[in-house]
Image 1 (cartoon, rainbow, N blue to C red):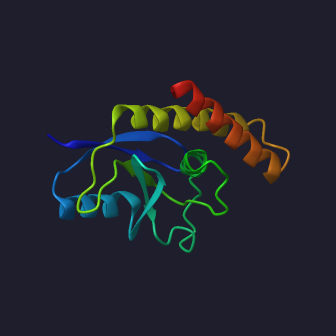
Image 2: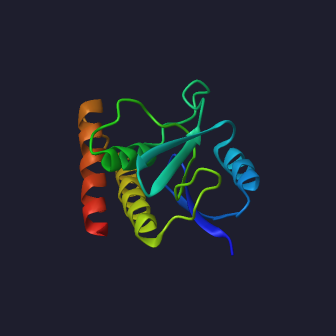
Length: 148
């Protein structure tokens, strides 16, 4: 049975991913999903966040939802962006586990809230970057609290 993972696009839309059991197959799939070299980051003990290792250099779009989720899981605003498609899996050393239902619910809640916010900004943009960051983090915090 395939393991569950979630792919987060830069516009905060989600795609369910069937993660293979084999570690090499997992790495190949992750590389294809993020579009190149994969960096796995740990912001929560029950989830790994996989992003393109050179996303910023390649000028991939910032993934606001992944950044907000990572900041909430860390408990503080992370001082750098996450770029391009991100994939959330369960933890693992010689193969990643599937994402458990509670963690998947957190990812889905935050991404839904951030997606709605990004849509709203199409017609009502924030006043400045500081206001945008504050609004993103507040939205993610609210959505994460509601998912618990």
